[in-house]
Amino acid sequence: MQHGVPQDSAADRSTTPQRVKRAARVLGSLGLLAAALIFVDLPEVADRLRSLNAGWVAVALAVTVLQTVASAWRWRFTASQLGIPITMGAATREYYLAAFLNQVVPGGVVGDVSRAVRHARDRSDNRAGIRSDNRAHIRSDNPADNGAHIRSNNGAHNGAPGRRAIHAVVIERLSGQMIVVVAALVSAGALIGAASERADRVVGRAASSAAGSATGTAAGAAIALLAVAVIGALFINTVRRRVAPASDEQPFRRDLRSGLLAPRVFKVQLLSSLAIVASYVVTYLLAARAIAVETSALTLLPLVMPVLLSMLLPISIAGWGVREAAAGAIWGATGLAAADGVAISLAYGLVVLVGTLPGAAMLAWAALGVRSRREGPDQIADRGRAAGDEPADGVPPPATQSLGV
Image (cartoon, rainbow, N blue to C red; front, side, top):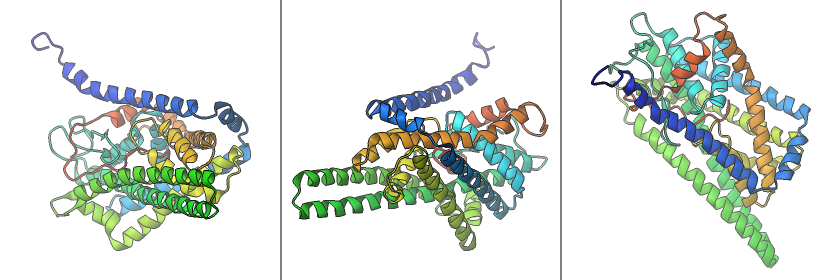
């Protein structure tokens, strides 16, 4: 105690902003979800969810299994390019655990943080490791600058193996997020094109009321494109600012070249990330079928990625609320039933949450002490929630917020 003030008061003060952020995310999810349900036909949404088809849900869950395994493989491949071995079984277990924590803990990247820290600790040399005086601090601030910011209290980085293990997670997430942004931009552009064609056909028939509807669709699609472009520009600008120009004095930039930008590696990263992002879309379309939405897949296809991109905004828990609000707005703007958009989004969220439950089993396993080399659930979550005020030199965020896997 000093001057009558408990010595842990500074630590308490440092955790207060993080508690406020976590509370804001909870309130944000609840508020946006309530708003989305208020402004649509709530009984219609309820009817859709009551018609949930177990067969389609089972198919969607099977896709999430493939999605998680593919994501784990991408992480393993990225780590191998940095000289950090990890078995496929361990990668899959850690990915399931990370996905579950991302779903249930405010922050959106807590699971990825725990995955990075745990792997770094395992791979660090005897001298380095992840110690209490050299902890990984993570924060998630905005759509262009969030994710894993890692620094040490004493200013020294972890040992090389541990540092590269952390970089592997950051780069693996970055690979996927770049594809999400590009795919959302392409989707929003397709919406603009479709709306323009519809307007041309309507004007040609001189149907003024329908023309007004088409104009509204075009305006809605333009707003969606603008939102996607803003988020994408913020994200790309952050990546550009943090990774160029590269130099040998910047370990992360060297690892970025080795794990993502090298020509042979980039092809593998591109193909694997495209497959994983495609699985997001397939899961969303299957969620639509599960609640008996009969709108064609071709019509729904360009709507999905802008909705998924909205989940990257760090203002909710696992995208709940913001995803439903975005879906209702986009469906309504394109002339479809907003209630269908909200209902599909809710069904998708439930499928993703259930799909991460193997991670909950692994968390319980750790809590029972069966895996003695792993941390317990409280330590895993606390380490992931630890927030730093400064990023490490040369380490950009891996993502904004998890898409639910």
